[in-house]
Image (cartoon, rainbow, N blue to C red; front, side):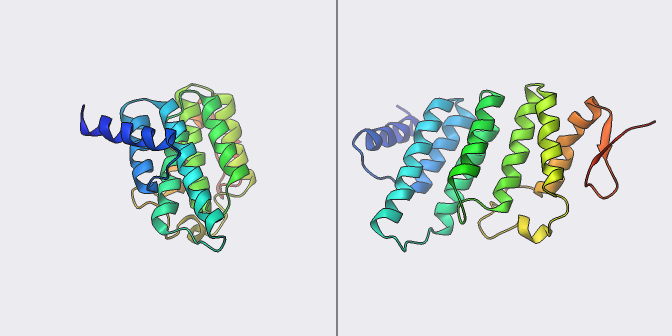
Length: 195
């Protein structure tokens, strides 16, 4: 058994024994299982365990403040689950779950943009251009390019993530070309390419 398999078995054993685990360890194994091994179902199981572990900290100590490491573990895990979802529907489900169930400090503006980017990527990969266009239009409606850029960066944002607005603009390119559209000058709407 490899070290990676051993870590997964250790975590699965803790889950079946209803024992808590270290959130960074859960996140590390989750990301590896989903990204490297393509084991999305196990990733979902590990995410449930991560959430349960985080919630138990709040239940046992109501004034508990999540550490930067715990916030980062949550954000990296959910971003991975959206980005590597096996279907566009699953990516949308995980995105909507994040918006519905989690608030600050776990869910930040920066995370929302990263998840939008991942959602857009998944939809364009599955050639679901109509839904991808809707994602772009929704981002424009909420003023993604008009908000103060400092809101997109916070101390919990993973340094490995690129500028989320630049990534969003790049990812939008394939979809916009498909529909012969482009952003208007102030990036508040789309316009037809007339050339």
